[in-house]
Image (cartoon, rainbow, N blue to C red; front, side, top):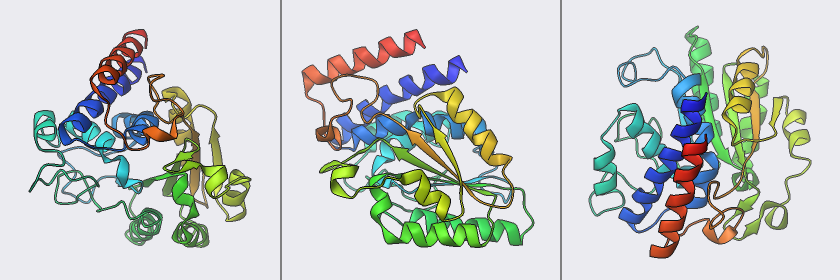
Length: 274
């Protein structure tokens, strides 16, 4: 999976350029979630430009919609729209490339960013696929700060109640949100125990920035029958450069010229080492 590991760092550099172009963006979460998105879009999910308009594809919801820059970078790499278009138009007046996922763009099924909404919608999609006797799967990526939303746990209860083994949730567990650590703002632990008590198959991904560990976890989820699965992906906010890593201040931030040069050099070095 060396190519996917390299790709994750290449796309991180795209994300930095997108944020510079748009003069804003949730860079910390973009960096922490990148391996999850690369694993999903380039290995795990059946989603292509060609099948997206049909009934024969897996579904994806980016519930933590504020990390849209990473999703745009991945979708551009998949061929849903040109990379140059994202760089030119992101967050500019009148553009469809807004600061949260926009289903007016190809490859995006749900407008998201109002936190807590993604999982309940994913539950509905998974129920529909069950009713249609389809083999399509449904994936949703949430932030850990998002777990403070009550609608997440309503969705979790429903997913288990309907035995939605075609549903896989991923929590980007980077332990930081805009105002500090998750445990200071709204403590989550025992986090795995909470999900397990709601009837989900819980998979702890020790290093959620490791492609191999993620792919093994997605395989385990696919092979789990009778209940939905949740991956708790333990990631690093701002992953890829010491300038950003594990710093709450980089939840939403635009690098200055000096920071930009250092971040891009760090990401390039990781890409070459991968």
